[in-house]
Length: 218
Image (tube, rainbow, N blue to C red):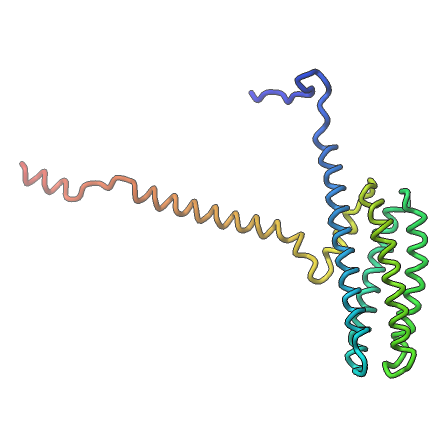
């Protein structure tokens, strides 16, 4: 009969439930991972702004970068507004979140202005630069003030992690474990097959022509 699980430690104090501990660890893990993914978004957009600012006369190339920036910012903002900011409204970051949402609205207006302009418009480059300055300021505040509070909070960031992972190219983190498991299964099957071959090889074979040699002996 299996032994009953102990409910107390050696000194007699109650043992902390493992489920509660793993839940806290899971929340902290999700917080770290989503912050890393959001920061990666920030770095990608800042890189695109630097590339666009270096373009001088090629309006087609500038427009391609502007379009990429606008798409990336729009997707990033939608995910934050749907999953990240609501998770922080009951924390000490709620006022910062409210300010961030207002800044998102201002950035959306600049994005709409860019998308409604022709790349040859003299205001096109100026609007792109203003958007870049606005986004960089917002990123500094988010990474410097909101992210530390998010990391220290008890908010549930699993839905945010799933939304970020579901984007094109971001699902590798979630499938890695499945790939590892499949690899382990294949390795186990190969090991089992090798073991079977070894067993067949090591099994003593019945001596051949035993009956014939016995008859000849007789």
